Length: 393
Figure (cartoon, one colour):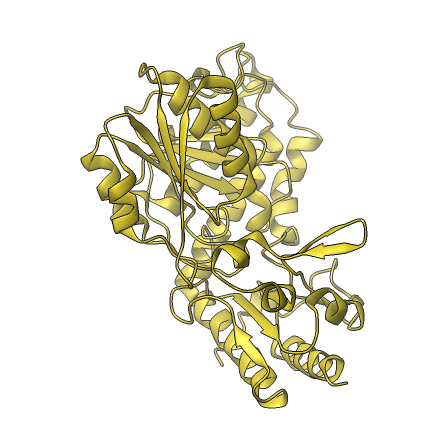
């Protein structure tokens, strides 16, 4: 396996003494370097970046530096990056903003079945409140959209296509550049929720051909409560918050400089990780975990999703004979997730896995094991031993 970078040899203070953390796709620990960078903007550097006196100078400069750091990570221009309070807000601005800015009487929006609820629920709201037509494309057994399905769904009233870069449960990587090209042939915009992809793999908005792209701080070692939306020059959106004209007039409200600095710092650190081979390190750990589980539980471990087209840190498997939530309950040494939901004591299968064609038993057996910056070979050994032991009657 690739040697672990020296900066990561010290355990994260939030993980010390706790279970092995394999839920990085849910949220990441805040990198201490990110916390250090934002701290002055919570204490001494309090000025409003929109003011014209000396107290505003450093906050204003820090805000624009952060914008440039995020832009650099995704191959954008700084002026094309707008800060938001979350990925869900960025998705809302992209979808609602595009539909309301369009003058077609019955705008058409296309998304896909395994999309994040922030997109799916926004589509439902646009249908309910603004008369939009919504098409939800199916996915194949790997969780991928077939470009031919999009081509068949596009029409002259299609305003926007929204497809995520990487699925949060399986890590499936959608063919975004192909989908964007098809959307543009019909005069539609392409929005990509890249919350799970940015920082884990290289993301370049020009290469992908996207018009709008969502970035989320707490998926890349920044705090919760900050995100960003890439808006290609020339794309018109209706504002998500009206008021004083901040963030190009699309999201009013005094900017949270501290959180913007955190996101910018996290983006710069992510760029360093990508350049130093972090994706390959995580893929080796992930594959080692999969191999250990398959060897220890022969014939019982089934990969959910594509073995090739997925994030390097994500392993979603179903283990025959054990429900995912039961497995994690009897393995408290591991902090991980299932895709199932619990309603009044009854578990329902993951909508993502169901859309991929998995039957209920298979879907309810699934566990998502997602690795990150502080994952180590020792963690993988502990996780494999614990999960194998917990899966044997």
